[in-house]
Image 1: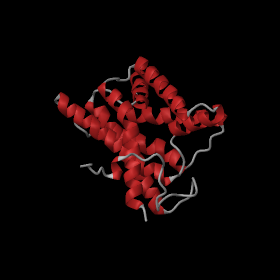
Image 2 (image 1 turned 135 degrees about the horizontal axis):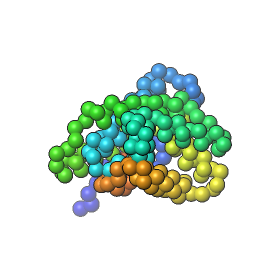
Image 3 (image 1 turned 135 degrees about the vertical axis):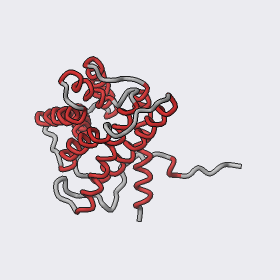
Length: 221
């Protein structure tokens, strides 16, 4: 007998159109702004779960940690300034930001700063892995909310898509090059690379796509 597999288990290949989707990068209804803020806070909280697990973090957070080590800045401020630096690269590329771009830098940085100081550090390898997986799931959930708001890409996503459009290189190849570059620089600066980094790299795509599928399913009329 063939077993039926729920459709929501298959990740989405697109960003679904939701009731809160904005048609303007800078102006939108309050519900959209609220969902955008919640999504970005969840994203930062998920990253904080990986930091507190103390076994390696995502490539961009490795980069922020490296900056933190070298400058003495907290992880939140290091993330904020790295976001501003990436946004500055948009200028020669003529990429246009939105309210979501600005809030991405601010809210994720605050969430990282606050939540990484609240969340516990696991006392065993099993709890460490669980915390990492929960963090990746929360990042995916946050992405499922903020990406569907359509109020401007985050600094890193905007850099990726603009390079893709200008060069014609496959978006996956551009993303891989950027991620490897910032991971290497961050590691050389003193950022933490480990199991969390590997699991994040392997699972984050599926996590984001799965939550996009669920969000699209829930909001479908």
